Image 1 (tube, rainbow, N blue to C red):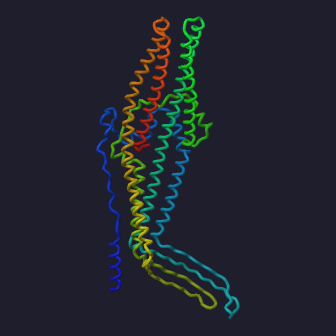
Image 2 (cartoon, rainbow, N blue to C red):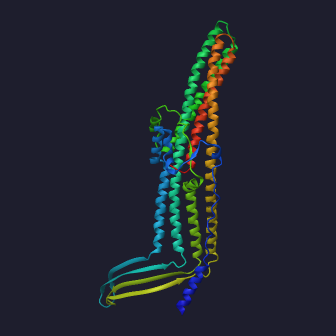
Length: 451
């Protein structure tokens, strides 16, 4: 009868154990809003997007990404955190199994009867906590989810690393190309300045034309050190990303390459796929599950803890002949007065769980925003690039015509300078737009969560 009463009490307490509510899934979009206005973009499957950076067909970019995957410090830190989490996971699992200890001792003792006599003791004891209310099981679940979160964080860091290397490399090539354009324009402007100075020396043009020509030359000269500074700074960012020293990096970037192909056609995954495979969302979800399990574990700690134990040993001494000793016991403990300590831990665990839920919710919303923003950027920048390319062709043609008309005396030198300035600006803006289009494409692929 007593056993029946004890079992009834256990089941009653277990039924009182509160559990966290089911996770409410945030609403998912039916389709990408931006994509409805861009018929050139089609949805595809995950396998199509793997190793997406190779679509740019740039061997230097491929090499930098491979080096970064092998040497980046942040990635190595994330890998070490996975190992740490797995170690804690194994430790937590051990509490689900009996704990066995073995002990042995030998020596000599003075009994006062036969002088010093030898003695020895040997035995082992085992204990096992009866996890009736699931506290240990919930903590194991929490450690499992925490390990999952660490692994997804590692994948998120890897994806971010690939995106950052690609974006930074694009900026290096953009500024290098801007330097090339500026140096080309400077040569044309210097030739024009020499011509104007010769004409001024024979009185064919006023001093004003010389000053205007020199102004344009000096303005172009001033842009070159700035582009060099920006290119160098972008290279220095690659040092941290790739984990290699400047000398080796400089050797890799020696070859002159164009901006990675901006005419690569973008593709998309369905919203459901993106929200399912993005590593940051999965990491946030795993962390939420871990916090839910920890909350339930803290709630279970309110109730009694039961332990089953046993001991078996052999002892032999002068006072006691060789004797076998054993016992089996079951014990329980229940906190009657802890001044709110357990309740405080439960409240704190619930608060952490609420934070984890909002972090997960924010990750979902952030993913939707990133995809939509990148798609919108790519669409609008592509349109702008087309117009800038047409403007560049117009400016180049106008520059040729202005030189011919000036030679025929049909227009003033001010018109020639204006044509040169317009052509320089159009050339530079076109390069900027090409780089921006490539960067928006990189952001789009990164936002899909595939690498």
